[in-house]
Image 1 (cartoon, rainbow, N blue to C red):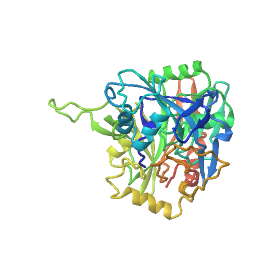
Image 2: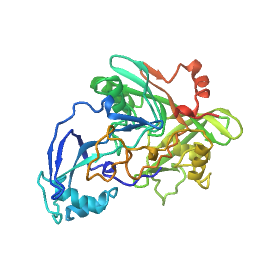
Image 3: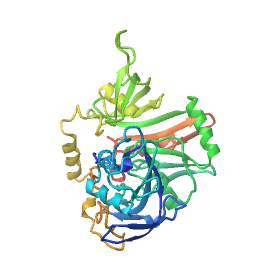
Image 4: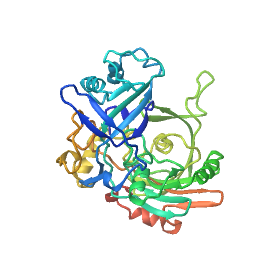
Length: 410
């Protein structure tokens, strides 16, 4: 799935949620804002359920950035138009004139040239992408730990375009668990066991074991083809390309003296569970923790995850057509977000917002496919958490169908 770059996607920004009283005058586009900080990340009334998806009611939000070396010397409008292409240039001109974009807390002209380290704030009407869940299932709860079954499509914590539509945000709204500290992360399209500490001390306990290499983890994947019956250990460096959002693998022992191996050392152990001749069910145990490690190591073996949009392209000529056919075949019956009809009871339209009256942000494409990769077990010294008990694990997985958007098995 592709989305246009929006301000939410830039790592240079620091975010702050606000609940404003907003007054505008159409002639000058001047804006008076009274900001009230919110103590909770999310509340139940923040969400709208439509077409099988959890949407977030659009809300006002302030992004805070500081001018870096690349931005220095640009006009304030050129900076935003070049760096944050999710909105048109005319929007940024209006936002600067109205004071929604400020430099060091002051309204500046559109021709203003920014200087290094200056503070830039952007107050906007934020629309989040939807996620394909109603709630987050709590598996186990203790005074200082909670484990949940993370559904596919929802990020673990605020990042990119997502803030309230995250595991942490939804748990805050629906279960009021207080401050949460996820001790590991799962990719947005990956499902399964997620361990969350409820205190900083417990989070530090887990962190020390993870950094000390004392934690073992296990996933289940559905892959293309007949995976080898014998246990396979992949020892191949992983090189993550941030601009492309994907990793590549290279055999750590294959390079000659004149060629330096790229990436970081990575190791994953794979064991076949079952196969039907077309796909295989594989147990995956990553020894290290690199970006997309299981996914790219499975591709390296020649048996990528059978619906992976990043690492399956060499096996299916047109992956988008393949996914569309799956949807058209009725394997996932949900309503397109574009079918949403605006109601003033859901949210108020912002006169400057480039997304209103739509509920979803511009550039969102609804063809989210739950990745066939599911986390089932984490264990360390003195503790162990599982998606289900081991004796019933495989039977549970085999009966867990894609209508729940967790994992699809043979």
